Image (cartoon, rainbow, N blue to C red; front, side):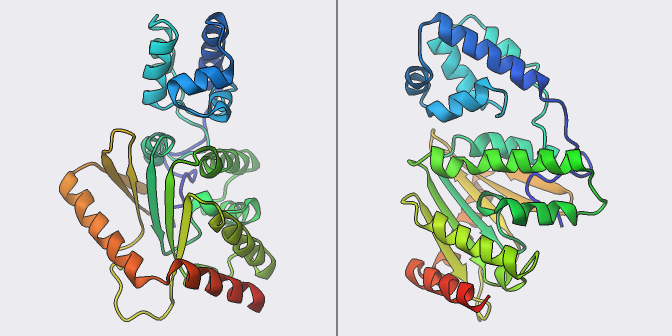
Length: 279
């Protein structure tokens, strides 16, 4: 099973030296302009925490960030040139990186998953269970790179309070008890905590369901700040970014139907709480 951002064929971790170099250029230009991270973030419409992550070389810059930063910092072309030499983001599979860049600035992000807890909702213990059981086996450095990349992505849920996040989870991914009862208790507690955020909606698709619009597999949908929609579907060692409006519209239709087929937000929380009590 391919896991979001998993290291596998074509997805080995790579050096992040170029990310740190790019970040240092951003920081130097920002400080030369006399801007604090918060002031700079307001002008490029990214949070102070996101700016810090990029300056410290922990986050791959989105093309939108590069262009806005150039405008704010004098249009020297330095950032565009530096961005052109960036190494691919460590810890993310090659096929996932383009989606991850779009995800970083999305204003709407919907996820349906039937195989495992989505990466944005995973606990460290759950994620490491997936990594350590991956085949072919990963070494310690690869596992660490994957968790660092996933942990960085998870900051989106709290750093982007104006982004609407929606998740539909199959009940079976929790009933499976991946990693054992203790890890499952932790993941249910974590999902319940995240469900309490104002910008996050989590629904559970019940195990017994006579009709289901998502039988063709997991999907993700996002809306960019320019109000353009993209979709992403992932399989074994591969992922497909979909920009064709007709295909995206079809997937939106399926996701909308699944929202009506899944338990309501309130019933989903009740189901999760009941499952937690059974563990």
